[in-house]
Length: 296
Length: 272
Ligand SMILES: Nc1ncnc2c1ncn2[C@@H]1O[C@H](COP(=O)(O)OP(=O)(O)OP(=O)(O)O)[C@@H](O)[C@H]1O
Ligand SMILES: [Mg+2]
Image 1 (cartoon, rainbow over the protein chains, first blue to last red):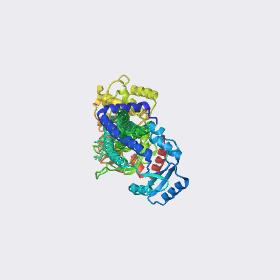
Image 2: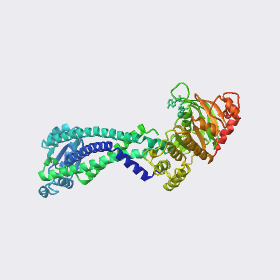
Image 3: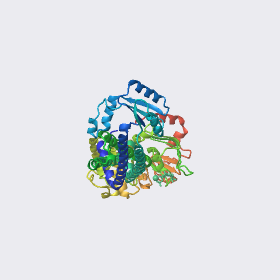
Image 4: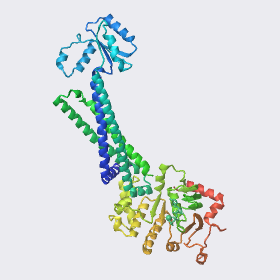
């Protein structure tokens, strides 16, 4: 069976236009909910980047003296092995540590200039069974262990920031999900109305032997188009908000948003996720409508 | 071409809409389906289209047990069955040509084929000049012609008509019947449910009468009236009530399983 492209395109556009108020409502709801999804995702990426860049999921960093000897390093390592609260450690030698410092200090070239690989302290980055132990474990390593310069855990402020963004993210996601469900229902209803508006045509099609898919495809496509249009609007909104944030940072030097400007790669991934969700919502809404209301 | 083997169909009501119907309709026959309102004529046609499925028994169309068809094949069955109704069922926002073309477009026929076949069939039904009219700009008879054109444009094996003249005056009715007769002469089997005494009595084709879901008469070259034996015999064509001891077709099939099986084999092998 050849479903002619021209036929399907014509049918879909006609349907969308005839149903334009419902279409508009569905598209706008998809747009708003997907903007929230996109924002939540970007927020998450930004915060993770800020925190993760230097702590990398590490809850304890043990910096060694720049001139620590090999035996000293070995004894610190065995001490780490004997500490039950520590689950895993990676050791960064001078070169690795320097490379990481350069990344962290990317914003201040003068600080980087002051460093050389040799003067950058080597470091053990450790994960703890529970972050709450960080302070006590740090204290043991700070009690004059030879070769240890200082053991630090991520500062309290970062943890607060993490919690705040987690809550914010959760709220955004809950709102987004509620809106996504309503956009699904709106698309479903738009398709139901389209089916109702075209019940005569559908009746004739069944009578003369059009296949089920031939009858269904224009309606499914209509839902898909609504989902995608909404998603595209959301993509634009997310792009604009990203531009807005970077403008704020450059102009007012809002340090909290330090790395909220995402590299293009993250942005592209987020936008793709947004479009994908739009496609899923559109197809899901119209599939349900077609199954429920188009008894072929 | 069409065969019912002990077909019973009930809706929610107690009394079945069709009760143990067995009959066979050959390729190229013209059959009137008569009976009072609620006797099961529309149900009969719906079973053929597989809009309904029988509770018991088998319906054969073109050698196929259509109860066995999987859901996705039903559209292909319907491409072999043209349909017209009392209420025409044209699409009000399409022209005559578009209405007829629609039937071919939605089964994926190429555009060139659509153009030539639509033109041909519009000529056949006598509407070659009115292709650009909208349905509301046509008389009832003309609208029914469009419906016939749409039903016939794909050259179906069978044309099913459910009271096609129910909304038309006698003169217009005659025109439609002439058209159906012409279509029948091309070899198309026609099954027509009707209440119109006049056309059944003048056309003198096979008449199948239903009463409360039961097959009560199957008469070659029959008339509308039932129990009106005087009229019938006075015209020299005996009515054959199935329920009686006569030798009508349906009785033959039910009474002689042998010949029934032969017919079934024939039907199965039959011209598609
Ligand atoms: N969808 C349905 N649901 C329940 N009962 C139905 C349905 N369709 C038909 N019936 C019943 O089945 C019986 C036969 O109906 P059918 O429509 O076949 O009659 P008919 O001979 O076509 O009548 P008419 O001449 O009035 O069109 C009737 O008693 C009717 O009430
Ligand atoms: Mg009826």
